[in-house]
Image 1 (cartoon, helix red, strand yellow):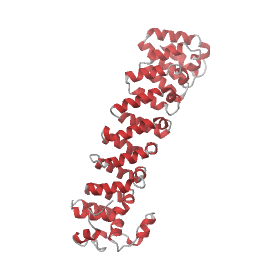
Image 2 (cartoon, rainbow, N blue to C red):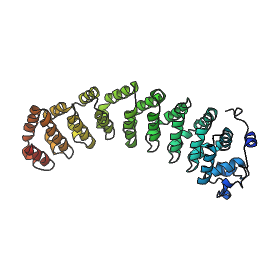
Image 3 (tube, rainbow, N blue to C red):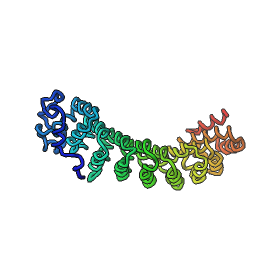
Image 4 (cartoon, helix red, strand yellow):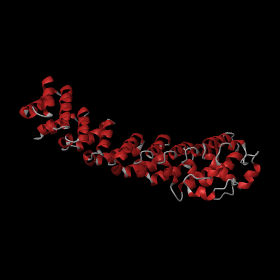
Length: 369
């Protein structure tokens, strides 16, 4: 990047008012200079030289009082001050954004500088290393990235963030901190800007749905995706619903989509799950999905499968399946007396078997209905 349009560091110092760069300046009181830049980064230690104004400002930024003072200076809205601070911290902009105190200066700085300097910052944070990603999964850095997203939301520069996230999409979505940065984009930015993230969500849906953290992120993604991409994603889930429903983690994605109560999507899902309801009823996550189906428009379809199966009694006696049968009895009594009576008759054929274990829950319910 050509810095010629910004001006030299020396010229900024010449124009800067007062004795700001003098270490005896009152704003430096309480700053421990003896430690230099020993923040765990060898680049700090290698350049530690308190006589260098850049080093003074960086050291200040890494302290609570110093960071607050520099933020106050930026609040003066003097371009000479913001340009000077930019020039002095730029080399360590990533270290600044992930530091406990330095992050506040970073957040103030990106509000204060012009578009040219913002582009320089974005290029440094995305090439050659994806610093945006590393900051997004950092306990302090993620706050800086969130501020970056809101600051750039109306700027073409936001594409730097979207591309950086796209390149690390699966890692971000499976990280308990990084996932919130994807959600911030989906919440703050428009559909056109987010399109690359929408595409990545569809491409990585299967892998994410089978990941303990990824499935949480995937459901949050489904809730936020807008426009035609949302329909494409829901269609993809329908196409893969038999696999997802039988996966202990992927099942949660199906439950979430069914819970949206989209009649067309649900009818498609309930139809595609034909032949699996008995099997799903006897698994922990699958039983919850079957209960959802019973409580919505899939009730007749599910109970019809139960009535045609020779494994109904096994479902009724199963630790998970007995809850499904209880739901089937309650829902059918409210909504379809004929199918309810058929289910009761089928269960009564196995009264002796139901007198033991979880089957007793079914007997008690039948007697109370």
